Length: 191
Image (cartoon, rainbow, N blue to C red; front, side, top):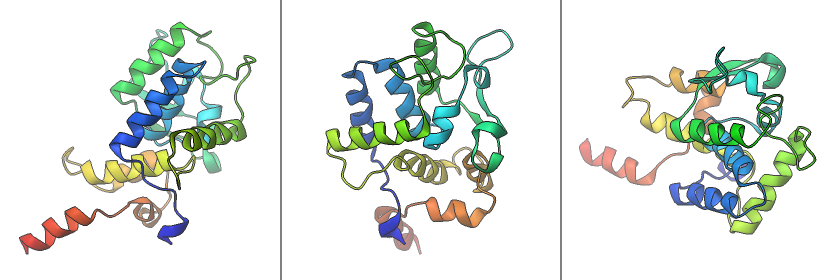
């Protein structure tokens, strides 16, 4: 099963994606694409369907959560996802350089990017940065794995990872989580 899953991105690989995004023609947009995947765990189709009104407060400011509607989510299971600080800052910057209405991620022609165009964009970026074995789902899997490793520090449980991941069963969430050999060694040494 592990061979069929998307690779987890290291902290350095995630930084490399963000650095690459800065060198593109649309750095603000591309930074948001990477962060929506790695810091919010959104799928490619959800990134494509995300609209500004799903992230803004009634005052028009970028809020504290993404209100992913059923119409934008897989299996029409919308959810609320807290917005991580780097992602919030990137969205504020993008909104200043865009229309601030309609889709968050727009194509070069001004319309929404399609889910397929998000997938193609990620595949090109992974190829350009030499991140072999990564797929557009790598950011989502990285988000879920990191969240699972850190949830105890936030006083939460695996259920608190399952909800923003929008998995109907905890077993699905567990399949996303990558093991850590070093943590396993430390754990065994404590026994």
